[in-house]
Image (tube, rainbow, N blue to C red; front, side, top):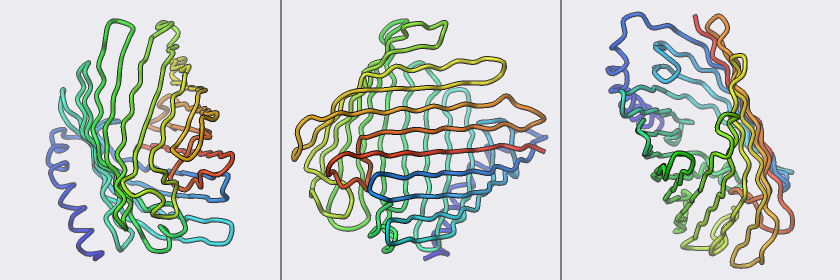
Amino acid sequence: MMRNALVIALLMALPMAAAAAEKTQPEQALRPELWLSSDADGNETQKYGLGWDLRRYSDDRWLGAKVERARFAGDDWSQTEQRLYVRAAGGGDLWRWKVDAGTNGDALLGSASLHSEDARRKEFFLEREILETRDGAERGLVQTFAGAALDLPLDERWTATGLVGVQDFGAGDNLRTHLRGNLVFAAFPEQGISVQLRSRYFRNSDPAEGDYYSPAWYGEALGVVALRRNHAGYQWRAVAGWGRQRSDSEGWKRARMFEIGVDTPHWKQAWLRANAGYKDTPVLNDTGAGSYAYRYLSLEAVIGF
């Protein structure tokens, strides 16, 4: 099984290596990465990775590999695994792609995306990751999420975005269908401030099948204020949202989210990206009972040489 997964990962990366060979003097880079998350149910996820770009042409064109240690844990359980990825990104003026294809020794993991660079941005994506619950981590269940998204400019200041997707959970018969829609108004374009209406809805074909949050249906709507500013080489991002959420088994209740992030300037071929956030809307391992909170922190550095 491990051999088959590695072969698939390598085959997915080969065409990207050929596309990246256009430039004659690529750099190399080390890419340490960190992901930490926790929730009100006592579940934690920790991922520590070290990537090596063997060929790095720009911030959106590279070819390399990554090793990662992932740990999933709860109040009275934990599961740890080692992973190996082949990763690459590239493309032309209109279309760009990115692939992280890897394995934990038993399953094919990672992500792949293809998106256009025009005003009506179109994206197709695929993600595979261990189901971050006790049953998912101990049995090695892999959840797969595939879909497409579209940005639709309405005029100089209004933009609509939409997403459709399907999600499988690695065991059983449940298939989750997703719909998401955002309406964005550039309130103060010079200051990078927008106001947004964000909505999402999903429906499960086989509710309450596993040990993850799985009502018959779930929906939420959030009013959001977003900031994106460039200052002295730093790119700052902040998003705050308030709204309502409900499912088939619960009435309307409060929904909140907050995210903040920064990209540092490039300094001697090195830079850092940091993101942190909080939400009280459900993720996979939410029990759906009472109040809920999900927190995360991610760090990624690129050190070129």
